[in-house]
Image (cartoon, rainbow, N blue to C red):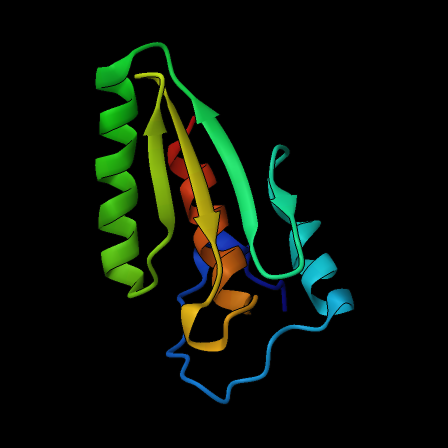
Length: 112
């Protein structure tokens, strides 16, 4: 049976006490993401650059819909009117979970 791509999966509920991914586990999922993501010990980050403010806002609104549907919300900021910095981690465990990589893959899918 073929395994699903990350962007085809659904985020699972996560609560305090859920173990963080080990560095090896995080690296496995990180390798499945599109280029441009940066992984640090407790979060993943990517800058998305757009042609103008309106396009960046369309992206932000699409990202918000995904975050609501997945019940997993990134931190993000709009800068210089055309780029969006996205930071993802699982707040309940103050670190990385599989959900973070699922959300990142879904965000990548809308950025093209």
